[in-house]
Figure 1 (cartoon, rainbow, N blue to C red):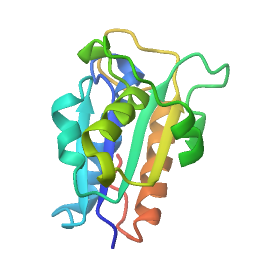
Figure 2: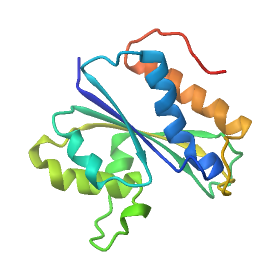
Figure 3: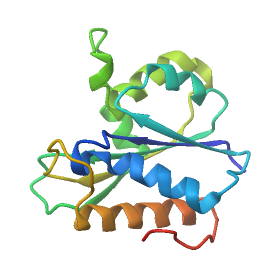
Figure 4: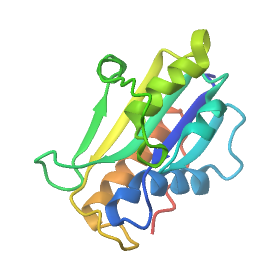
Length: 164
């Protein structure tokens, strides 16, 4: 089995922006004792200290919210590795607390060098509400459930959902 790192980005006190962290929380509940070949990482809103934890992983899965898509909240996107690679950024002046998955990927590639994995997936969930409040809207929460189920299936694990 491939060493897999699953990273959820977002700010849980900025409404729907916290969906990546919510997906990681759900995966932790469903997996219980996480298998040795899976790392679940709540990236929150920063990433540098966590990028070093990617060493030794053969696959990376990102989950994040995306704004201004023009699609309804909860619309789910899955990007193939070729599109992820095309959007890698290299900005040495990036502010640590605004680091997003595409920038994190750029820095991970530099940090990991030859150990940078080829197998990368990105799940993005369309959101429009990032107000300062706790809670995820129903449409975005449903998309989070769908992403969790897709990741579980991708990992070959059939563990029932614990979503309430």
